[in-house]
Image 1: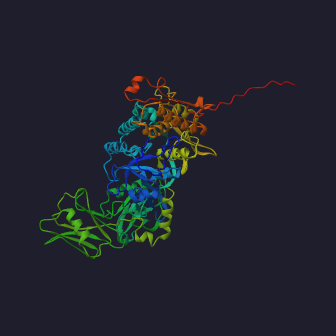
Image 2: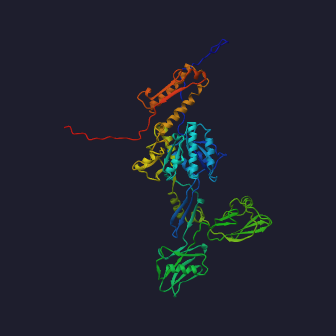
Length: 634
């Protein structure tokens, strides 16, 4: 009690309310993967974000998807090919937020161009260990970028961290058709702290691309007789406007090329297509710009003239590029109009300089040569002439010194979606390509969408509600349809004991998470995800809220404070439906005190032991309806 020595009026506040347990967050995931940029060197530094816009401001956008669009002579799209993006962080976050996710952490393993190594993820896991708030671990890019065994080793490291800290839970993806490999590779330790989901998801998300990442491959340089005849393609400059025709004349197969029209002379009796191709192969004329091959099975007998037909320019994906020496020199590309025929020439001079005349790029090198990096730096920083149609960059590591004269070499044309001839002169084609690209949908591992469901269910129902029988947003369908019989092996594994949660599509319901088991699928205590996560919540919340007791007197007054605080918290959980039992006594118990949870020796050694027991509710996984015939009574 305070001793007063000066006469005055003193105010004393008396605390009458007991301390309470402040509940911790339950669904704060940490996404580990590659990002476009790392802001202020945020590699390996867990960074908290709240929205996708905030992520983009700090870490950038998704990886550009490279598309190749095939177009025929009538400007019709015949095929679209893409290189699937390896870096999925941005798409994963979109799925997370679309499915109800909130605040989360980003741990960047490096830029998109970084080497894909397990060590990058292990370093990020080590950094995440120091953060207290995250409660879920997602290895976003590991499943797509690491060798299979490295991915499994990383999963084991994640489970080990969860088991050590006891405040987080890991959500894993199972590689396509690798269910048994996953069960074998995941090991046997700390399985109750993780869950796995299968299969991948066909989402409604569009691929992110730019006009420079879309190559237009217009295969219009062809002339064919019919589906079983011959196919002629042309690789010369577009300005020549070549043609092809077949005439019936003479007694032998012959060819002529003028202006530059390819004329095939077929005998009056006709000729089998295979014979024409064979004769072309042995012909010694100037045919480097043309190619003749059998179309279909080549069974047609050509016995009538085929009218002269224009042969247009055929786009080659490797055109529009000039390299001094691959892969350590310089690369020059050209984006000007097709009607031009640009060239590149390297000359020797007194100093490094450039000149563009008659669509020829001249690079003058000093007598001692110049490194590719010096050439590129000079081009980028000091050149003042019109360079918008040429681009120069280092190829490889730029270790080769350019010190020899290279004669003028044709630069053919490199078309991108944003090229002037497509975007401004062929607006209809440009828009149709954009429409078709927008129909391409991203396929993603399911963990990010599942994490969003965790957050939504925790917020709306509570962590004790199983995150299952919930429809996934932004999903068209799972990539694999799973039947009841197939799910039996996923849900209950008699030998491995490692359950994998299925994601299934149901008519009229959409795509649902149809499983709520941890990897410890045969463990009666820790079989279910909500049970494990509820214990995580209660353990950490009580641990942090009882920190004030450290160094307090280990006596009955302190014991009563702690017991009342914990019982009040557990009672509130029971009333919310988190604990089983018709009465509080059936739902939980809290023991603390001498003779109850501690001995005299414990007190002498400064230990205050609190025993807490809770009856966690478990999900009704199997609903059984029993029917029987009722005998007629009247």
